Image (cartoon, rainbow, N blue to C red; front, top):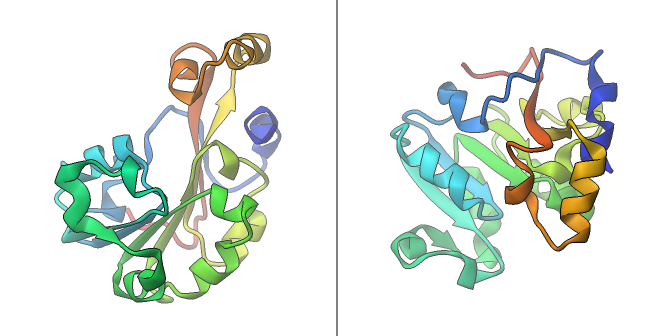
Length: 178
């Protein structure tokens, strides 16, 4: 539903519906300490190529973290310390749905960049911007019927890309780090 509502966001700050990936905003990641809440492995792989100063991954499902990334894993009990350490926090939109977002964003340093990412992040961004979020990186559905067909057949997000969804980045012009 959030991804289907993204076209309604046209009036908000710098809607970038050019298909850019969050990692294309290299100023968020180059030479910065990154903390990702919720492992998004394809994004982490792209961030690695930007040369971050360090990466920490907070994830409840440790089996979703490949062996070569285990050294970057942070036990969720140490979330506060990891978020205080980072220069850029990437928080999955699922944190909004599960009620942990307020606590997470309150632990990030005031001068750190915060990105909220994923299809679950795709709603009106103003409340997130008021909490210091610099970018909401989400998707918009370009063909709702096709998206619903793929999902009803058991497909997931990766099957939607390139067919019926595209990436959208909503930028808080007062907080963007470029």
